[in-house]
Amino acid sequence: MSLQNEIDEKSKEIQSDGYPMSFGELISLYKDQELDIHPEFQRFFRWSLLQKTKLIESILLGIPLPPIFVSQRDDGVWDVIDGLQRLSTIFEFVGVLKNENGEKYPPSRLMKTNYLPSLEKKVWESDDPENSFTSTQRLEFKREKIGIQIVKRESDPSIKYELFQRINSLGTRLSDQELRNCLLIMMNKEFYYWLDDIGKYEPFLNCLVLSEKLTNEQYNLELALRFIIFKNVDIRDMKGFVFLSEFLTEKMNEFVKSSTFDKEREKEIFKNTFDLLNETLSEDSFKRYNFDKNRFEGKFLLSSFEAISIGIGSNIDRWIEKKYDEKLIGDIYERAKSLWSNTTYTTNIGSGSSFNTRIPVIVPLGKEIFKP
Image 1: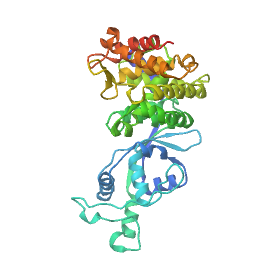
Image 2: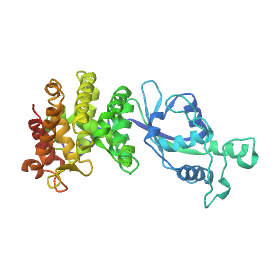
Image 3: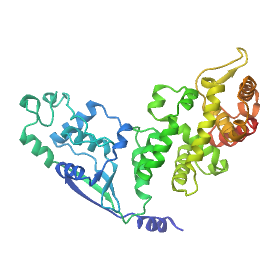
């Protein structure tokens, strides 16, 4: 098939429209629940007060803003694909923004800017005229317009997820897992809450010992997802993927759509695995072994996580049959330690190794080493 034929065929799958809308109209759509900004996303998008103030300032000054992208659902409601933080900022400022429990956020109070220093402490509406927008300013604000690009419901259902992923992966606003979390919420909230639940399991977090930055970026959920994926898929499926993030997202989507993926069984395996690791290696689970000092030390290592957790998880039914005693602790300890004297492992990790050479080697190796 020629390039032009591919373009012609794929372009038929996307039906779109676009026109300007006032902020007053968008506020009304949101209040009438005809515009879904996914309140669960608020935990992933983190704008500062300065960023929020500058957006309000831009609207007041008539500075053009990038368009909002929405996707029309079968029920007619618009799902926001790009523009969530801009809309959330506006809805919060005028006092209508709700969290995922339906509770309203307190209306935001602005700060001064170089162009409009009098914005300091201003709110949308107040009995104190010194710190409130005037009725004229509120009317003019609501009449300002922004472009709306609409992906119609006749489009291929996967288009909105692809569009969301492309737009939001071009910047640095979200980590890869925060982006996946947003996609999950749009596709299947139940699956997201399931992943979020296991990703916050205390014995699991005890074994990881992640920095606050990585935790804030939802890296613990990415590690939980890696565990589920690498334990269940044929590692050879990675062939052809240039980026690991694309592979993880693709497999996650497959699990979401699968009618045979057993979340309860996977949750049981996950918890049994990290219960065992927490009771044996605990915070040493995924660290480098120092033979000179005869101990595990340093920071969390992804290669150790991929080998040890998936190795144990793939054999967990046999491990939990064993009696928990000093012998079992010693057995797990020695197997984890043996990785660092295994040349197959040590030559396939480190900054010089890529995911598609590292993972196909160390995951099967871990499954073999941790076979009881």
